[in-house]
Length: 334
Length: 276
Image (cartoon, rainbow over the protein chains, first blue to last red):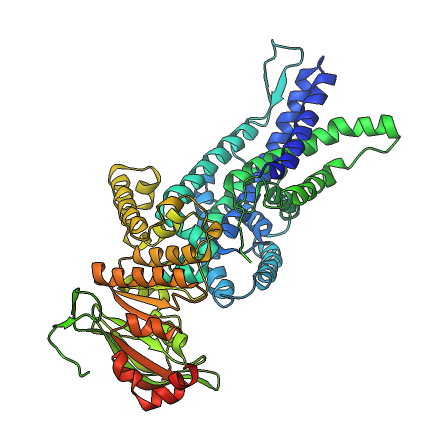
């Protein structure tokens, strides 16, 4: 048991040093460091929200839902375009209704006919759903860049201005997004761990046949879990959309959720969150503080670290702890 | 044995226990099932009485598991009906069969590997949980009470199966024989009217088999649960069951007490003749 944790401990120690070192070298301007940290956390919250959708569906159906990114985009598009006609709260409710409808359709047309097929078949099916949704979203809602106005002022607020020079600039909608993410995660964790339905979802995740034999209706569970993932997609889509604008790239950025779930564990909701935060902070820190070091020390160009950092970190985790930080370690007796 | 409308008291084949064998609770009437051109079951009829232990035996490929899956609602027969508790069922799905009171265990284990023993057995109570999702989530009074009640039932089952020491152990870490017990425990947690056991002793050593035999008999005695089981071990079948159905190539070739079946020439030819 001991040597299993050692590499993980080393990895985490390295990450912690990576986090602390830039502060030590930039002690004169802690404001900038904290801003980078907050920026990373914010990006991390966004990753986490997408990763959550992956984890939910994987937990309950054992399906790796490639379409989660497309669902986020579709939800964001729906909310953004509907909000042009009706108040935002109504647009959100309608967006949720659309995602629930989508869950019903996916269950009926994709999952039910493919029940008991290999995991890879279902993965391919969700890949199909993903490309369909990308295109269908454009067909229905258009392919321009749309905006979602959360009604918070865009002007950054300065805090801690009297503590050190320059203070820290933060955005209100970033804070709102973080609060929403925390609430969402808390609700989901309680749902999975404390309710009979949550237990049923976990049961379905482990063994479809056995779950049915104890009276759990598979089809209903799938609709429930895809609906929940749809609601998460609405939240993620709104947060992303408010920050970056609703555009096609949202569904691509969602691929960053892959390293997040590898880091956190495919079946862990807290893992999705913490994994998202680690990757968000890690890549921002690496980009801002590691980049210049590489430039100075090795005369490299130094850019683009943000693009690969997450995947390299995920690879390291696959090597030392394939089940992720919080994943369930399933022991198969051979 | 002809169908008798009145419950009768029967001397149990073992010990001093007297169980009341009740009325027919499950009847399979002229069931035929085929996959493509392959006939798995043809025109099979038999019945199961309340509180009895009914075995289905037969050589490999005789259609035993298919029969169990028909009762369980996994397969829907092309012909014939299954009548449970007097009601005919057509195309009942597995989870609906479960809701009607049919539980099962699996030949190859199908436990929830990500959960510990306690949670696995607790899932068997799922159908009986009535509190709303929200109430469960916030552990609101009645929901909390309900959870505790179910937990108490599960604890009794854990005591009964003598797996107290493994409550919090992930099921994947348990030895095979204990995993089989957890599988049985999960089915028992449903408090089923009818318990289907698909080769409960498959792959077990002698000691584990003896334990499992004892548990099956105790379940039947103490809870009065009606049991239908498939088993290869003839000694086990003859000791355990009240009545035996014999299948061969999807057809019923024998039906009766172990004694009757043992002396049935068709059965001897098809099955016992081979294995003895």
